[in-house]
Image (cartoon, rainbow, N blue to C red; front, side, top):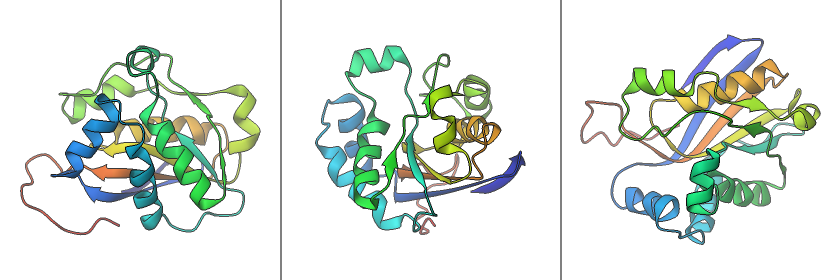
Length: 184
């Protein structure tokens, strides 16, 4: 996925695996089963498909809602971001806040876009860290891209020149069955 449309920001995406067995069970274990330790393997797999970081690139996790963080006890994207940042030798910056937006589970593409539109904001104290360098945006799963594009929009508005989404898994597009094309 590549697109432009915000002030001088380029957005691209890569995923380590397709969201099919056993990857779906692994994501579920991290997200809902409390298996934080599985994030180590997932993060290393993500690094294997990550393009080399640009200059002073930073890793930024997609924030979860405060309700989800309370229920889970952690943000799964942050768990993955810690591993990716360490393995790439770059800083992790919690640059985004998610004051609004509900769960994306069971929503179609249009509803997902509407659900997350404008739901991210850049934390003011992190603006200087994301201005200019490539941002490696981390999430567990790429489904429609709505969450990533909303977060990238907020980052672009505050000066990020490029946002590279890196996820563990990529859900197949709606209506596509049995596709095993490599994701790049």
